[in-house]
Length: 140
Image: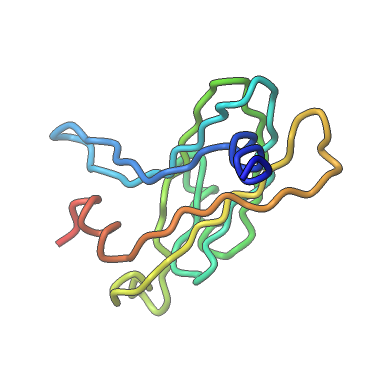
């Protein structure tokens, strides 16, 4: 029990959240990553295991094109108690979003401790369904 507690105590937290839009800005679904530890952590990537979505730091055209093609790479540091949000973006095939069918999806957040970036860590999971993401994002 002690090892289990120590394992989860030293990990970043990740969860699904929504950026509530104003009438001129649409609602978007995000994954919020928080560093609850007393040391810095490095986020070295994030993936969607099923290939339905990709995560992006912003909605710039270049970022969205790289993400849709599967070539988007990012890394950043989080200070103690700092939070960062990544936008959940749908992938398309032949002009149709892959999220159109209801299915289970997992996001994996790859990370390392700031004082031991050479040591691999188990990724943090965020599990949901495409239906929930569409519902939270206000899609019809």
